[in-house]
Amino acid sequence: MLEYTRPSILEFYDSELSAMIAADRGISVMEGLKLFLGSETHKMLTDASLKMWYFSPVAIFDMWENEVATGNPRNSFYICGDEI
Image (tube, rainbow, N blue to C red; front, top):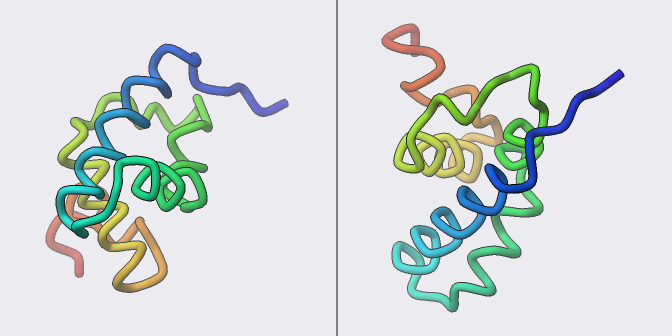
C-alpha cells in the first residue's frame, strides 16, 4: 500500500516550489503552484517511500526543471549525479 508524505511536509514544499517557479517563470504564485501540483516531481514527493523530503527545495526545483525540459525529473543531477 502506498504511504503518502505527511501533509505538513507537502505544504512546505508546495509553498517553496510554487514561489520559486513563479519567480523563475514570471508568473503568479498560484500559476506556479498549479504547474508544480500537476508534475511528476510532485507525485514523487507525495510518495513517502522515496523520502524526497531529504532534498532541499532547490534540489526539488532542479528536478522539476529537468522534468519540464526532458520529460523526466529523474534526469536531475541530484538523482543521477554525473551519469547524464
